Length: 517
Image (cartoon, rainbow, N blue to C red):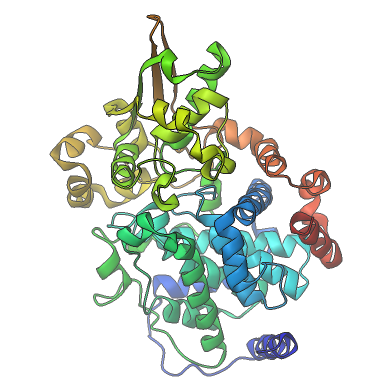
């Protein structure tokens, strides 16, 4: 399809969405999906607290940084060769490329629940540019997408898929991000959600860890969501009870279904408040370990393999679980990137040697340094039960879901960590009504035992950038540093705070400046 024809079709669909249409027989009772759709479709900037809009602005800049990092990597360039640069005429394809580039280095932002930004920022960015939205409309679309994607993901958090493997997050985030940008009526949201979740994606861990297929973990669901939006606009209907029905999404994707999470506290309980900003590439628990290694580097200087007898990284069960899965595939410079981004020893060793860890450390020539791998072989992971307990006391990634489930969470806890985890978690109290003081405690403690007999230890419970008091007060400063570190424009970084005041032409120029340098 030519660019001109694609634009004409998009304009026609927007016009169709403005007119009410018959969708055939409807269920007599509201479903969680129907309630969520009605709320999100009518969400306007004045409905969103100022602090939440400010978080969304930081989220946009942070995810742009992640996309830029993906663009600069050799695998990102191959993706662009296959599907085009994200700054292209067709917003449907641009959304998929934005999503893919920002996700696979694990530099994407997270929340309770899910790795949201890969769709909830990527899709609004593409459609804000194409539809010529102003800054407030862009930010409100991001918030609407966050709230929809996080809630649906939360309903299946106590299930077999978690983190980036829970790619169904992006079915919801992409549908919501596009439809809010297009100001679609509620019945189209409901049908698009129902169609998108008709065949939700389930990644295979072998492909996820051992091949370049990781680049498709958000690209594929975003494309599915774009088709669902087009189909809904053409009059196709989805099942309004697809989430909670006994033959629906949660029946297959949740060990402990939480359908009540989908519409809980709409307009008062903002999942965007739970945002954690990724300051380093890598998977669960790597952030805190890298933060600690950087502190040790600042304290004693760069380390060489011959200086170190042993490095012990103590962390929660979640970090150990991901690290053990990745370790099966990590064996040096030729390791698949899908596994390497979940590995703990390599980033810790790199940071102890150089003082920092960035996306450039995932490619040659840095990845080929034999000294890093020699030092990485001295890293040993140990379980810290206190950190696991703190992990479940925090809201993200699991704690709030366990509180929401109450005693029903026991089968999932037992499957994740056995009876010992059930005993360790114990009672976490009741689910919260507000996320304005949310935390994500994915901590780590790094101990370096040197050959000269010295021992140096640093610990951190909440990583730099993760949800907590420090991030709430400094998120704009943190993401600005992240953006500039990947070569982003000073002008873009300096003006993100004014994004909410930008008119359509200003938003388009700002997005162009963020990517076309």
